[in-house]
Every structure is written in C-alpha cells, then in structure tokens.
Image 1 (cartoon, rainbow, N blue to C red):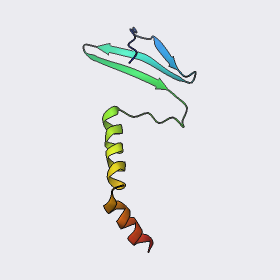
Image 2 (cartoon, one colour):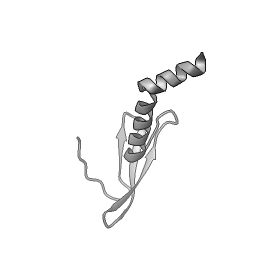
Image 3 (cartoon, helix red, strand yellow):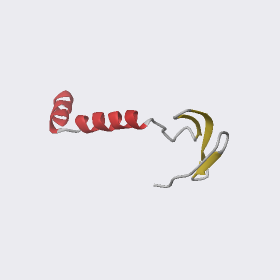
Length: 72
C-alpha cells in the first residue's frame, strides 16, 4: 500500500486518467472527489464487497442449476 499525505485541494493522479482530490477535511472525516472515465467503475469498498458476494452466490451450483432449468 502506498500512503500519501495530501492537504485540502491537493490531488493525486492514477494511470494518467484518474484524479483524486481532497475536497474537505472535518475532524476524522475526509471528503474526496474522483474524476475518472465513465468506463471505470468507482465503488465504496463496502458496496464493492456486497457486489462480489452477490456475484459469488450467483455462481454457486444451485445458481447454475436454476439457470439451467430456466434455459431448458
């Protein structure tokens, strides 16, 4: 993990086309802005983990069997 220090209104750039800017700092909360191409999905980690779990559950044997039944 790369750890960087940034102040309000400072930014960092990832892969030439993603920019993350520190918008506001209040106590222990930091508000960031993300500029990225539309084809790059951006999720909060907890949402991303829920999506991954749902995808994993959908690919279980039961899910595949249910899909096969629908297609039969």
